[in-house]
Length: 237
Image 1: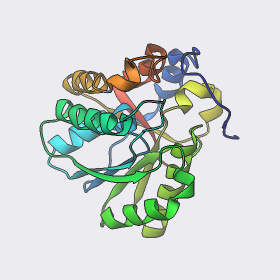
Image 2: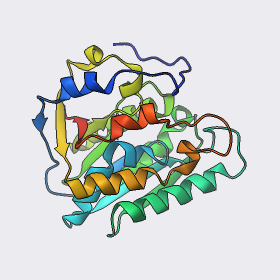
Image 3: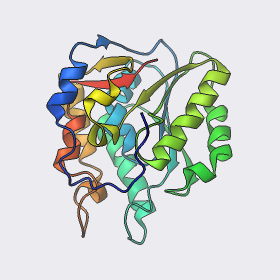
Image 4: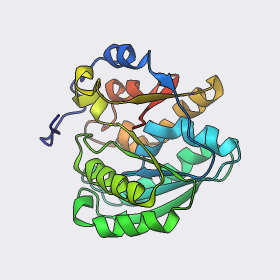
């Protein structure tokens, strides 16, 4: 499958959530092996949207969780100080999500230009890797340049370091028909009812993306619906 790099409009309906549920309903349950979890997030909000439930339940189980925050998302739309706003939103979102410590390592790569700074990303990932780590990274064909560049680097580093890797879609849910991803090996990470509620509250902290001061939201309701499932779906092979 070829990736789609043309501009896209989140307000467009996108793939029906029912189509994804039909694909994922029969997929096996999955969870990481015991050990540290590194969730690599191209922009503040991707980590909570795609893996907020995993972050919460893993941290509450006493396992270490680190979020590697690649960019500050400052170019989502024209607004002075958006980088500061989005970092603050992430901090508040994690506070709402889970009441134990989750480490955030900020890299500060330019939003929209991760592909031009892959060495910095590669070095940052190496710095936090340790034995028995599971790397949780964006799908390398997610349909967004930053997501794809991040996913490629994470895959390269994880394989070279012989650590576990799983990948998560964000924009692929919206952009691709479910039939395009049937050949992938999926795992469903099941969420408790408490985790589902905490994740829903945490997502609402990303006000700049859901209820911006002007213009259309980056995360309208038709996109957020993909992240309200009673499980999170990861590509596990």
